[in-house]
Length: 465
Image (cartoon, rainbow, N blue to C red; front, side, top):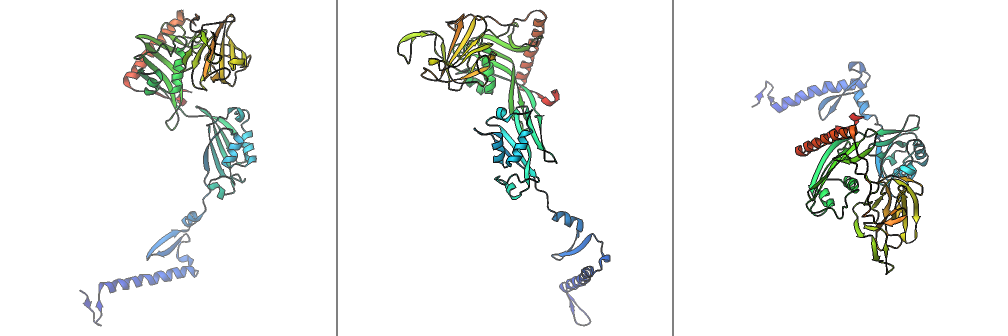
């Protein structure tokens, strides 16, 4: 309850609060008025008292200026994938660079990168625009359109899984290109499985990448026919390396260090080994190289569709000698050189269609027919190595479907590729054999430990360099 004064006024709490507010507001108003009337000495020059919703607050002049000062425009980065028919100039212009600027950036690549040769479909280019003095993105479909002073500031081009080219613009507006190594993590992994329907399905289910499976088939193809020698219940084991990028994704599968196929209870382990002389190859457990003069199957995943000998020709309609073997596979499947040698013919050859012949030594030659196209370096006179891609399966010439017609010639005469006796490769002896056996035993232990522990041997590739 309020109390009554001598003059009869009733002092209630609400009346008291109103009086206090007036008492505070009047001096404050006079203080601020005095400040703007020239009485600046009454307050520090860096602070101003203001009223917001009835509460006094202080703003420093420095913070006011910092908050109102315009911020520099942020760089804009775009990732552009190279499409069929693209060249580097077109990609940069499509991203928003002016032609003269793009030309200057491309010129800086001389000596380190050839965009006409090295730019591939699917390559992802990282293109960054930043503040500059040249109008560079007036046609770009980005927020950079609002600022006419954006310029190409950086270009990153992938070269391989472990390297890229970095092009940057300096303060003078010049572009400089440098090769940069990507930070990678290397890991050694194991995989194993049992074949129920096909090696491809079993390998896929075991998590083996397609590239590693292709390499597995290649190193065993000297002795094993993957169409006839693989049975249900056969097993495989692998230990190989792979590399992960900064985001943890696998960017490359490396070498197979150890492999073992168990075919109808017969084990055939192979070990990757480099000899003292620098020869790198795969050897069996006795130290014998798997490499032969010629591969029996110069194509991956193909089906033997026609054998050597007399047959009724599917197009000509009469019986004639089939002087090779046919491997059916989808168009574009890679074809490998069956051995080291020199290409003596590469081009059209009548009913053979696109045709390659390789001379391996004074005795043996091999021929490959009906190709859809040749590999880039396949030409007459070129040297090739065993397992090198020389062309791709097709159906050119007299052919009823995509396949490889493969011939082996001994002293110029066609012989059955499936029955020819092929000389063995290198056999390790003496101190070299002892060195190999020590490596072999250590590899067996390493595989067993990784497999049983279900772990991976992980190393930072940057630490190894």
